[in-house]
Length: 59
Image (cartoon, rainbow, N blue to C red; front, side, top):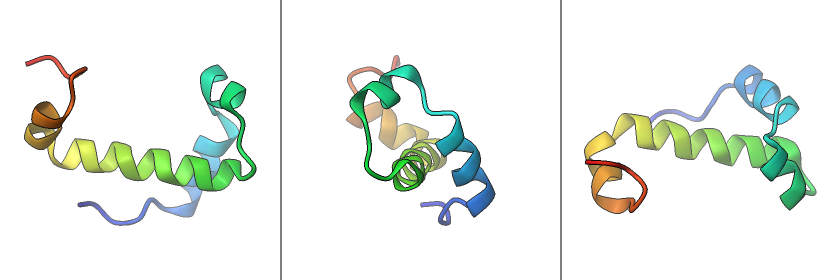
């Protein structure tokens, strides 16, 4: 798994939440962005694992 996302990436992601993420709401957009990036990095680091775990990932 990749390292913890850096603060600049988190800040940028928190400033640009998608409309769906905004609609869902968050008490802590910074933490929300951090979790989104951690998940994204994990999927990028392990595409084979993602393929087998996700029903949305095409083969």
